[in-house]
Amino acid sequence: MAFYAPAQSDIVNPAIPYVGMIFGGLSDGKMVMIKGMVPHHSSRFQIDFQCGSSVTPRADVAFHFNPRWDEGPQQVVCNTLQRQAWGKEQRAYNTIMRGQAFEIIFMVSNHSFKVAVNGSHFMEYPHRIHFASVDTLSISGAVNVYSISFTQNQMIPQPFPSTYPSTQMMPPQFMPAQPPPYPGGLMTLAVNPAVPYSCDIPGGLYTGRIIIMNGVVSPKAHRFTVNLQIKGGQVVLHLNPRFDEHAFVRNSLLNKSWGSEERQVPFFPFNRGQGFQMNIQCDATDYKVSINGQHLFSYNHRVSPVGRAVKLEVTGDVTLTNVQLQ
Image (cartoon, rainbow, N blue to C red; front, side, top):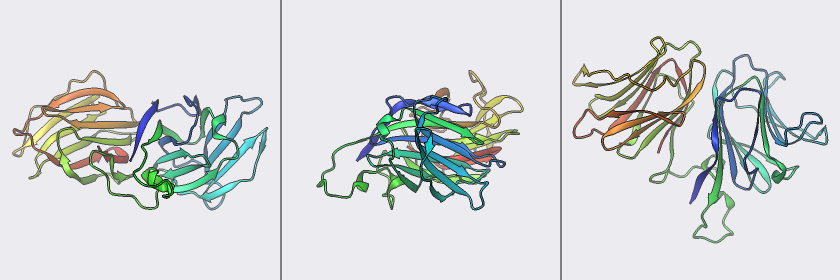
Protein backbone atom coordinates (compact mmCIF):
# COMPACT_ATOMS: atom_id res chain seq x y z
CA MET A 1 0.00 0.00 0.00
CA ALA A 2 1.21 3.54 -0.75
CA PHE A 3 0.88 6.53 1.49
CA TYR A 4 1.52 10.18 0.72
CA ALA A 5 3.50 12.33 3.11
CA PRO A 6 3.49 16.13 2.85
CA ALA A 7 6.86 17.42 1.66
CA GLN A 8 6.17 21.16 1.42
CA SER A 9 3.46 23.47 2.70
CA ASP A 10 0.59 24.10 0.29
CA ILE A 11 0.62 27.40 -1.58
CA VAL A 12 -2.86 28.95 -1.59
CA ASN A 13 -4.07 31.55 -4.12
CA PRO A 14 -0.63 32.49 -5.51
CA ALA A 15 -0.33 35.56 -7.71
CA ILE A 16 0.22 34.74 -11.40
CA PRO A 17 2.85 34.76 -12.83
CA TYR A 18 4.21 32.52 -10.08
CA VAL A 19 7.81 31.40 -9.63
CA GLY A 20 8.75 29.36 -6.57
CA MET A 21 11.26 26.85 -5.33
CA ILE A 22 10.45 23.16 -5.04
CA PHE A 23 11.86 22.27 -1.62
CA GLY A 24 14.15 19.29 -1.95
CA GLY A 25 13.81 19.33 -5.73
CA LEU A 26 12.20 16.48 -7.62
CA SER A 27 12.65 12.78 -6.90
CA ASP A 28 11.12 9.52 -8.01
CA GLY A 29 7.54 9.43 -6.73
CA LYS A 30 7.19 13.15 -6.00
CA MET A 31 3.86 14.67 -6.98
CA VAL A 32 2.84 18.26 -7.62
CA MET A 33 -0.91 18.99 -7.60
CA ILE A 34 -2.23 22.23 -9.06
CA LYS A 35 -5.88 23.25 -8.65
CA GLY A 36 -7.39 26.22 -10.39
CA MET A 37 -9.75 27.55 -13.02
CA VAL A 38 -9.29 28.69 -16.62
CA PRO A 39 -10.97 32.05 -17.38
CA HIS A 40 -13.45 32.09 -20.27
CA HIS A 41 -11.18 34.44 -22.26
CA SER A 42 -7.97 32.42 -21.82
CA SER A 43 -5.95 31.65 -24.94
CA ARG A 44 -3.22 29.67 -23.14
CA PHE A 45 -1.27 29.20 -19.92
CA GLN A 46 1.86 27.27 -19.03
CA ILE A 47 3.36 25.28 -16.19
CA ASP A 48 7.16 24.93 -16.28
CA PHE A 49 9.45 22.69 -14.25
CA GLN A 50 12.70 24.65 -14.39
CA CYS A 51 16.36 24.23 -13.53
CA GLY A 52 16.66 27.49 -11.61
CA SER A 53 14.87 30.81 -12.02
CA SER A 54 17.26 32.79 -14.22
CA VAL A 55 15.55 35.13 -16.70
CA THR A 56 18.60 36.23 -18.73
CA PRO A 57 19.76 33.79 -19.91
CA ARG A 58 16.56 31.83 -19.44
CA ALA A 59 16.82 28.81 -17.16
CA ASP A 60 16.49 25.38 -18.73
CA VAL A 61 12.94 24.01 -18.65
CA ALA A 62 12.82 20.25 -18.12
CA PHE A 63 9.06 20.05 -18.72
CA HIS A 64 6.95 22.75 -20.38
CA PHE A 65 3.19 22.02 -20.11
CA ASN A 66 1.20 24.49 -22.22
CA PRO A 67 -2.59 24.17 -22.71
CA ARG A 68 -3.71 26.24 -25.72
CA TRP A 69 -7.09 27.28 -27.09
CA ASP A 70 -5.90 29.67 -29.83
CA GLU A 71 -4.54 27.18 -32.39
CA GLY A 72 -7.52 25.46 -33.97
CA PRO A 73 -8.28 22.19 -32.15
CA GLN A 74 -7.46 22.77 -28.49
CA GLN A 75 -4.15 21.17 -27.60
CA VAL A 76 -1.60 20.82 -24.83
CA VAL A 77 1.92 21.47 -26.12
CA CYS A 78 4.83 19.95 -24.17
CA ASN A 79 8.51 20.59 -24.73
CA THR A 80 11.95 21.05 -23.16
CA LEU A 81 14.17 24.16 -23.29
CA GLN A 82 17.92 23.44 -23.16
CA ARG A 83 20.61 26.09 -23.62
CA GLN A 84 18.04 28.60 -24.95
CA ALA A 85 16.73 26.20 -27.60
CA TRP A 86 13.38 24.41 -27.68
CA GLY A 87 13.28 20.74 -28.63
CA LYS A 88 10.65 18.79 -30.55
CA GLU A 89 7.09 19.41 -29.40
CA GLN A 90 4.89 16.66 -27.98
CA ARG A 91 1.17 17.42 -28.33
CA ALA A 92 -2.00 15.98 -26.81
CA TYR A 93 -5.69 16.84 -27.07
CA ASN A 94 -6.55 19.44 -24.42
CA THR A 95 -9.24 18.15 -22.03
CA ILE A 96 -8.98 21.24 -19.78
CA MET A 97 -12.01 23.45 -20.42
CA ARG A 98 -12.20 27.23 -20.35
CA GLY A 99 -14.56 28.53 -17.69
CA GLN A 100 -14.18 25.38 -15.59
CA ALA A 101 -12.12 24.32 -12.60
CA PHE A 102 -9.35 21.77 -12.97
CA GLU A 103 -6.98 19.58 -11.00
CA ILE A 104 -3.64 18.64 -12.59
CA ILE A 105 -1.25 16.19 -10.92
CA PHE A 106 2.33 15.79 -12.11
CA MET A 107 4.04 12.63 -10.84
CA VAL A 108 7.77 12.13 -11.33
CA SER A 109 9.09 8.67 -12.17
CA ASN A 110 12.63 7.63 -13.05
CA HIS A 111 11.79 7.74 -16.74
CA SER A 112 9.11 10.38 -17.22
CA PHE A 113 6.61 12.90 -15.93
CA LYS A 114 3.14 11.33 -15.65
CA VAL A 115 0.23 13.76 -15.83
CA ALA A 116 -3.34 13.28 -14.58
CA VAL A 117 -6.15 15.77 -15.27
CA ASN A 118 -9.31 15.78 -13.16
CA GLY A 119 -8.66 12.33 -11.77
CA SER A 120 -7.80 10.57 -15.07
CA HIS A 121 -4.44 9.72 -16.59
CA PHE A 122 -3.72 12.28 -19.33
CA MET A 123 -0.23 11.80 -20.74
CA GLU A 124 3.38 10.81 -20.13
CA TYR A 125 6.43 12.91 -21.04
CA PRO A 126 9.85 11.16 -21.11
CA HIS A 127 12.66 13.04 -19.39
CA ARG A 128 15.02 15.00 -21.66
CA ILE A 129 16.74 16.65 -18.68
CA HIS A 130 17.26 14.60 -15.53
CA PHE A 131 14.61 15.49 -12.95
CA ALA A 132 17.28 15.93 -10.25
CA SER A 133 18.21 19.23 -11.94
CA VAL A 134 14.72 20.69 -11.42
CA ASP A 135 14.27 22.98 -8.40
CA THR A 136 11.76 25.63 -9.55
CA LEU A 137 8.08 25.70 -10.55
CA SER A 138 6.77 28.48 -12.77
CA ILE A 139 3.14 29.19 -13.75
CA SER A 140 2.13 31.97 -16.14
CA GLY A 141 -0.56 32.97 -18.60
CA ALA A 142 -4.32 33.35 -18.34
CA VAL A 143 -5.14 31.07 -15.41
CA ASN A 144 -6.35 31.32 -11.81
CA VAL A 145 -4.53 29.01 -9.41
CA TYR A 146 -6.15 28.18 -6.08
CA SER A 147 -3.58 25.84 -4.60
CA ILE A 148 -0.26 24.11 -5.27
CA SER A 149 0.49 20.99 -3.23
CA PHE A 150 3.62 18.87 -3.00
CA THR A 151 3.68 15.26 -1.80
CA GLN A 152 6.21 12.46 -1.79
CA ASN A 153 4.82 9.07 -2.79
CA GLN A 154 6.57 6.82 -0.25
CA MET A 155 6.12 3.16 -1.01
CA ILE A 156 5.89 0.36 1.50
CA PRO A 157 7.27 -2.92 0.04
CA GLN A 158 4.53 -5.14 -1.37
CA PRO A 159 3.96 -8.75 -0.32
CA PHE A 160 4.47 -10.01 -3.88
CA PRO A 161 7.45 -10.42 -6.25
CA SER A 162 9.06 -7.31 -7.71
CA THR A 163 8.28 -8.66 -11.18
CA TYR A 164 4.65 -7.55 -10.78
CA PRO A 165 3.71 -4.50 -12.92
CA SER A 166 4.83 -1.20 -11.39
CA THR A 167 1.28 0.17 -11.76
CA GLN A 168 0.39 -1.88 -8.69
CA MET A 169 2.05 0.87 -6.66
CA MET A 170 0.94 3.94 -8.58
CA PRO A 171 -1.55 6.53 -7.30
CA PRO A 172 -5.09 5.88 -8.61
CA GLN A 173 -4.96 8.72 -11.16
CA PHE A 174 -2.25 6.89 -13.10
CA MET A 175 -3.74 3.40 -13.03
CA PRO A 176 -5.86 1.91 -15.82
CA ALA A 177 -8.63 1.09 -13.33
CA GLN A 178 -9.16 2.32 -9.79
CA PRO A 179 -9.48 -0.19 -6.96
CA PRO A 180 -12.18 0.38 -4.36
CA PRO A 181 -11.14 2.83 -1.62
CA TYR A 182 -9.65 1.12 1.41
CA PRO A 183 -10.99 1.78 4.94
CA GLY A 184 -9.67 5.04 6.35
CA GLY A 185 -8.45 6.19 2.94
CA LEU A 186 -9.33 9.27 0.88
CA MET A 187 -12.41 8.71 -1.28
CA THR A 188 -13.28 11.11 -4.11
CA LEU A 189 -17.03 11.69 -4.23
CA ALA A 190 -17.08 14.14 -7.15
CA VAL A 191 -14.84 16.08 -9.54
CA ASN A 192 -16.14 19.38 -10.98
CA PRO A 193 -19.77 18.63 -10.02
CA ALA A 194 -22.56 20.99 -11.01
CA VAL A 195 -24.00 23.19 -8.25
CA PRO A 196 -26.60 22.71 -6.75
CA TYR A 197 -24.84 19.52 -5.71
CA SER A 198 -26.21 16.67 -3.60
CA CYS A 199 -24.72 13.30 -2.73
CA ASP A 200 -25.06 10.47 -0.26
CA ILE A 201 -22.14 10.07 2.16
CA PRO A 202 -20.98 6.43 1.89
CA GLY A 203 -21.14 4.92 5.37
CA GLY A 204 -22.24 8.24 6.86
CA LEU A 205 -20.16 10.95 8.53
CA TYR A 206 -19.25 9.20 11.76
CA THR A 207 -16.75 10.30 14.41
CA GLY A 208 -13.30 10.84 12.94
CA ARG A 209 -14.39 11.24 9.32
CA ILE A 210 -13.73 14.43 7.35
CA ILE A 211 -15.45 15.94 4.32
CA ILE A 212 -13.00 17.92 2.17
CA MET A 213 -14.34 20.36 -0.42
CA ASN A 214 -12.27 22.39 -2.85
CA GLY A 215 -13.93 25.13 -4.82
CA VAL A 216 -14.03 28.75 -5.90
CA VAL A 217 -16.39 31.51 -4.84
CA SER A 218 -18.27 33.17 -7.69
CA PRO A 219 -16.90 36.65 -8.58
CA LYS A 220 -20.23 38.28 -7.67
CA ALA A 221 -21.16 35.91 -4.86
CA HIS A 222 -24.03 36.81 -2.55
CA ARG A 223 -23.93 33.65 -0.40
CA PHE A 224 -23.66 29.88 -0.58
CA THR A 225 -24.79 26.99 1.63
CA VAL A 226 -23.42 23.64 2.77
CA ASN A 227 -25.86 21.29 4.53
CA LEU A 228 -25.33 17.97 6.30
CA GLN A 229 -28.50 15.92 6.68
CA ILE A 230 -29.36 12.85 8.73
CA LYS A 231 -31.99 10.27 7.82
CA GLY A 232 -35.38 11.92 7.63
CA GLY A 233 -33.98 15.07 6.02
CA GLN A 234 -33.16 17.00 9.20
CA VAL A 235 -30.22 19.38 8.77
CA VAL A 236 -27.76 18.81 11.61
CA LEU A 237 -25.22 21.30 10.22
CA HIS A 238 -26.08 24.31 8.06
CA LEU A 239 -23.10 26.41 6.91
CA ASN A 240 -23.96 29.68 5.20
CA PRO A 241 -21.19 32.16 4.26
CA ARG A 242 -22.87 35.49 3.49
CA PHE A 243 -20.86 38.04 1.54
CA ASP A 244 -23.56 40.69 1.77
CA GLU A 245 -23.33 40.53 5.58
CA HIS A 246 -19.69 39.46 5.82
CA ALA A 247 -20.92 36.69 8.11
CA PHE A 248 -20.49 32.92 8.39
CA VAL A 249 -23.82 31.65 9.76
CA ARG A 250 -24.27 28.18 11.31
CA ASN A 251 -27.50 26.55 12.40
CA SER A 252 -29.56 23.33 12.49
CA LEU A 253 -33.01 22.59 11.08
CA LEU A 254 -34.61 20.04 13.43
CA ASN A 255 -38.27 19.04 13.51
CA LYS A 256 -38.95 21.64 10.79
CA SER A 257 -37.68 24.48 13.01
CA TRP A 258 -34.46 26.48 12.83
CA GLY A 259 -32.45 26.78 16.02
CA SER A 260 -30.31 29.67 17.26
CA GLU A 261 -27.79 31.02 14.78
CA GLU A 262 -24.09 31.04 15.53
CA ARG A 263 -22.01 33.73 13.81
CA GLN A 264 -18.85 34.31 15.84
CA VAL A 265 -15.66 33.79 13.79
CA PRO A 266 -12.15 35.24 14.20
CA PHE A 267 -12.22 36.41 10.57
CA PHE A 268 -14.27 35.96 7.39
CA PRO A 269 -12.25 33.42 5.39
CA PHE A 270 -13.68 33.76 1.86
CA ASN A 271 -13.07 36.19 -0.99
CA ARG A 272 -15.15 36.60 -4.11
CA GLY A 273 -13.52 35.02 -7.15
CA GLN A 274 -10.97 33.07 -5.09
CA GLY A 275 -10.48 29.42 -4.30
CA PHE A 276 -10.84 27.71 -0.95
CA GLN A 277 -10.64 24.38 0.80
CA MET A 278 -13.27 23.59 3.44
CA ASN A 279 -12.79 20.68 5.86
CA ILE A 280 -15.66 19.48 8.05
CA GLN A 281 -14.57 16.99 10.70
CA CYS A 282 -17.04 15.05 12.82
CA ASP A 283 -15.91 14.63 16.43
CA ALA A 284 -17.71 13.06 19.39
CA THR A 285 -19.04 16.39 20.68
CA ASP A 286 -18.97 18.72 17.69
CA TYR A 287 -18.14 19.44 14.06
CA LYS A 288 -14.81 21.20 13.50
CA VAL A 289 -14.60 23.42 10.43
CA SER A 290 -11.37 24.70 8.89
CA ILE A 291 -10.83 26.86 5.82
CA ASN A 292 -7.58 26.78 3.85
CA GLY A 293 -5.91 24.76 6.60
CA GLN A 294 -6.91 27.11 9.46
CA HIS A 295 -9.37 26.04 12.17
CA LEU A 296 -12.26 28.51 12.12
CA PHE A 297 -14.86 27.24 14.60
CA SER A 298 -16.48 24.25 16.28
CA TYR A 299 -20.23 23.58 16.19
CA ASN A 300 -21.67 21.47 19.00
CA HIS A 301 -23.97 18.61 18.04
CA ARG A 302 -27.62 19.50 18.64
CA VAL A 303 -28.95 15.95 18.21
CA SER A 304 -28.54 13.39 20.99
CA PRO A 305 -27.47 10.71 20.45
CA VAL A 306 -25.35 12.14 17.65
CA GLY A 307 -27.06 11.55 14.31
CA ARG A 308 -24.76 10.29 11.57
CA ALA A 309 -25.03 12.63 8.56
CA VAL A 310 -25.82 10.64 5.43
CA LYS A 311 -26.25 13.39 2.84
CA LEU A 312 -24.29 16.46 1.70
CA GLU A 313 -25.84 19.39 -0.16
CA VAL A 314 -24.12 22.46 -1.64
CA THR A 315 -26.04 25.36 -3.20
CA GLY A 316 -25.49 29.00 -4.06
CA ASP A 317 -22.76 31.14 -5.55
CA VAL A 318 -19.89 28.67 -5.65
CA THR A 319 -18.15 26.28 -8.03
CA LEU A 320 -16.81 22.97 -6.72
CA THR A 321 -13.53 21.50 -7.94
CA ASN A 322 -13.82 18.25 -6.01
CA VAL A 323 -15.45 16.68 -2.96
CA GLN A 324 -13.62 14.04 -0.92
CA LEU A 325 -14.27 11.92 2.16
CA GLN A 326 -11.54 10.84 4.57
